[in-house]
Length: 277
Ligand code: R5P
Image (cartoon, rainbow, N blue to C red; front, top):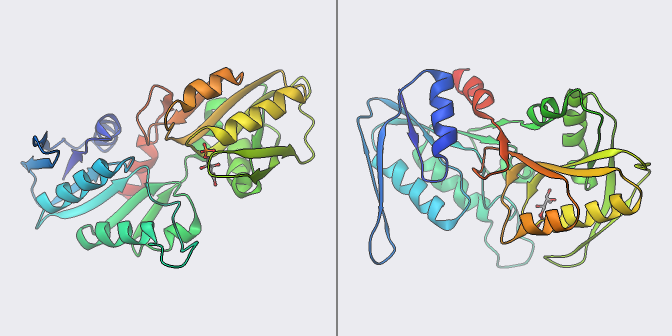
């Protein structure tokens, strides 16, 4: 058994290999002058664990080529961040169900698929052999012992934040969110008294940062002492991080499902545990 690190998850792959005490395979990635990707994987025997988050179209192509290079090998695909999961149904006639296409592709190669907090139940249901790791306990433990209250930016993330707050040992609540368009949201409090409190907003994904920025503004206006943002997947599209800090966010933390500077909480051991079962 060897761990194969994909282009998007080199550090997490290494951490998973260390947690499982198995070696890394040699993987070579190149780009041809026309932009096409080349993949070669050497020294793999009967089984392998491929670790590759899907944060871009290139990541998806690299994953497909890695799986193809491992022809004849028993492969477990660890996709820490499962991109394309937000298009989990047809919202309009004629649309593709992106996550269904991704699920079909991965499962045509892999015996088993492991991911971390996939965006929705609907997205998960497009897979036949999916195991899901919940990173909320890990985020909760990161804040354990700190004088904070946690909020979910919407009702959709409320159950996740409940788990997170339980592990942090703190109070929690949720905010009501109304999406104006793809990039703008308006947030109103439900029944939260945040005055003088250190608030941690917890979500599964920070993408454009729009949700967190609006929530932060509202919480600071309501008298919060400080606002921090925590998420599983630091997509951080464009200048999302600048927008967050400019809005007054004290700190942003995430897990290493996407490897960014803010990815200080590792899901490696939690993934290794699922792989060991
Ligand atoms: C929405 O359902 C998700 O849980 C996140 O709230 C959303 O993806 C965050 O996106 P953005 O950072 O672009 O507001």
